[in-house]
Length: 397
Image (cartoon, rainbow, N blue to C red):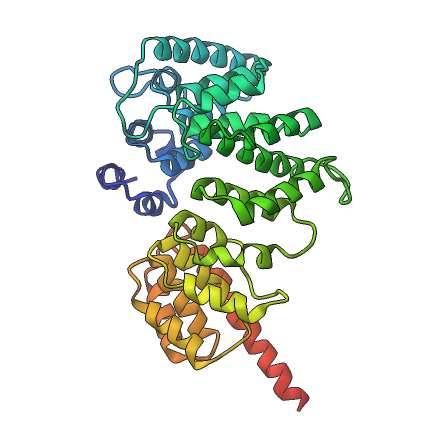
């Protein structure tokens, strides 16, 4: 384990480089003081992927960090929700885990009361810490209380918001849905409407994770779908619309999700278009319109939207000069994933420019933690299937 290189990667926020350097670390290295130093640095820098990797590979989460800092106490005091979750996940003793939870809960409550915080980056999430710990200890709060905690930051991307929505979503009952629907229709507060829609989405996500028969359904599925479908046509707030599109994709039973959301591929808001890019595909009753929308999204200013759209275009059966031109244009895209998808799109159409670009990606792979390794494995499988299909077709002639 090269600690100086790892600490430098953490400091510059390069999670990919850090994980690549960590590949193959021995049990002895992960049990060393260097690993504890690295865990401390990653937690303080907000590098959650590195924290999760180290904890998953059994770095000792009970050992004090440099300066004698107790990891659990530090995470609770500074409102680092995900760090605390990772640290507490390694305890196999339920009694010890609950003791740690109660200890962390007191610290987080005191820190919140005194407005203690580690700084503004990343934003502290004391309410997320408190809500999660209370839920684990059997404390149940009303939907209004959970929403109030989320609206402290009123940011759907913040942990305070997510944790409140998550715990409401696990209830999957009519009462919770009715509350969420009322909130989603509350004209007095935009943040309340957003929270209500997001809760509706989480209700069906959580329901889908339950071990139930395939034909099991929520009693309010139809009501939710009808309400969300109406929002697709009427909602003016981009963030609420984004949440509604995402929720509708889970509830939709008519099989017309693509048709219902396609027009929003041309929406003025980046977030709306990014959401749509995760849903669109051409296996629909309107394949040409969907194809045109994906081509449009492939030119989006937001990198993740371009990559999503290009990955969908990779799987399109069509092979036209126009489609090849789209892929060719993105071989030099500044975004790594977009370049990779562009190379795959060309290679799967037998274009040597795609194969040459893929060779460059392969040459950059050092190990399974290298950026693109997983996607390249999938692309390699698709290329092999394409060759097998071509050979079978030729044999049958």
